[in-house]
Amino acid sequence: MNSDKILDAKGLACPMPIVRTKKSIAELESGQVLEVHATDKGAKNDLAAWAKSTGNELLSHAEENGVYKFWIKKA
Amino acid sequence: MMTIQKMTAKEVTKMVLNNEELFILDVRNESDFNDWRIEGNSVEIINIPYFDLLDDFNPALESIPDGKSVLVVCAKEGSSIFVAEQIAEAGRSHVSYLEGGMKSWSEYLEPVKVADLSGGGELYQFVRIGKGCLSYMVLSNGEAAIIDTSRMIDQYEQFMQEKGAKLLHTIDTHLHADHISGGRALAQKYGATYYLPPKDATEVTFDYEKLEEGKDIYVGNETIKVQPIYSPGHTIGSTSFIIDSKYLLTGDILFVESIGRPDLAGLAEDWVGDLRETLYSRYRDLAEELIVLPAHFGKVTELGERGLVSGRLGALYKENPGLNIQDEGEFRKTVTENLPPQPNSYQEIRQTNMGKITPNEEEQREMEIGPNRCAVHDK
Image (tube, rainbow over all chains, first blue to last red):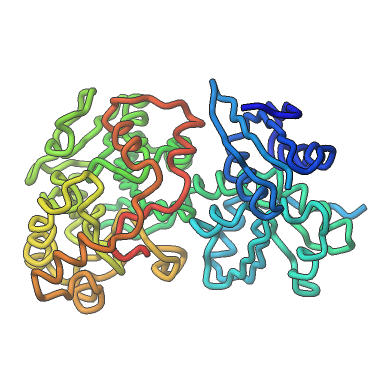
């Protein structure tokens, strides 16, 4: 999936993946897509819930060799 | 700068069991919170996800009653420290966080003494308060047997060390679907014998000793007899024990406020008859004075004095809704329809307990997250 920016949050524990995601999203224009890479398993449910509560759209997610990838479209 | 304190799962457990007032701010996401959380008669708990507090911290501050101490809880602890520090910086005092988060909460075992046994031994119940699992240790003359051992074997090891006891047997009443058994690992480590009901063990990949009706297991003084009773229903092999002619360990067949579900090994329809036979006939024939000690509790209301979960068999026949369904068709419906969701990863947990898969420690932890949900009434 195409993205406008990639955030490497690998190795970071909660709450940092979401704190960084929030900051990165703020630097994008509406409609642009942020790709997040994280290794914290908790990030999966949290990112989905965070996207829902902020109105940003979680387009897709995948897991590759222990790395969780998320694609989030800015509202 | 204000400081925050660390609370351990053990400290929180003591507060819950002593009915001490405890205000908890759980900062996990809403679905995890709804699935499973810290409960207690004197616990007041609210949920505000940490990611909703990144811009505006006021909802958290406004939610904490004035002057009250607050415990912040999250999945592992990182986010709870982050939130707790901000609460403290805003001038609130008595702010603490749960060390290790819900992971630690899920793993802590509280040893509660059940009774002294007639031969001079002791019986302990280990209450896994965060998950609702109960395991048991029989101690006598420097020897120990553990029934329905949980995965965190170090906590039993430490207890046996304090008691100066040597492990002889680990016994599982059935092949568990809600938690990973520590019985095999602990037996291996101490050269003890690991027992399983043979009918639950047809697919296991390791050697074990067969639990058989009438085949007593001895611990220390001969008077402490562990007498197995075949009691199918939750699984086809489920076996109960009578210890010291007084204590009936029912595994996942009979709980204090509910009964076991027959569907976790995929054969609900086939086992309904066995479950009914065990509960309405086999157990009926046992002495009403027996004290039932189950392998689970569903609600904190089932925790009695000091946290002990138990009930007189005669009293359960009067009060337990699962023992009072006279109509067979109605019983069948209750135990096969509208059941609560199945425990997290229950199929992988069964595979692990059979030795078919060997997940690492972190994966095992993840598999066990959440409540046990082994009873039909755990909605």
